[in-house]
Image 1 (cartoon, rainbow, N blue to C red):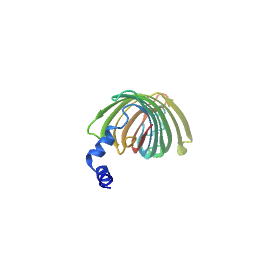
Image 2: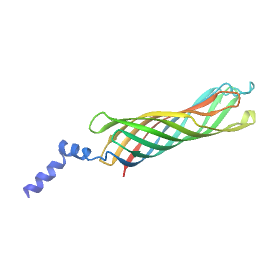
Image 3: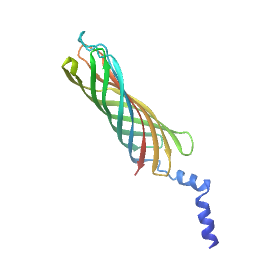
Length: 195
């Protein structure tokens, strides 16, 4: 009976929690889901002097990532971002953007504490953007291969479950013929499940 009581008490000690965190897998597969906010910028120069789409807007964004931690420091991720539908007020009228980006990145992880890890990532993406400006009777679509990067924090609740906060710069998500590029970025929070 006393051994059972001592065992139960040890479950609540900081030492036991640390031992759980030390058992977190150092390598392997993981899945991450996140939700947050996107920021999208629209350029003034669209290649058509009559259509000035200068402006920026925000929308609710979603993110899903499949990752592989190859070593305790290095890994790779495949991510899909839905930047949401955003209406940006511009001099030419409301510009309605619908953008998604798929990325492939290399990751570098650096432990800050026993339970908190800083993660950096860099790679390339594939973006698809659709644009509609009703006041100009203007519709367009664009695909690009932007350079992407980001930083994130992972806080381990258990060996296999972590809370994540990520900032991702998704680069030039679209470009107008003879004009400038649109850009996108996302700030998100979510959960990571290790397998």
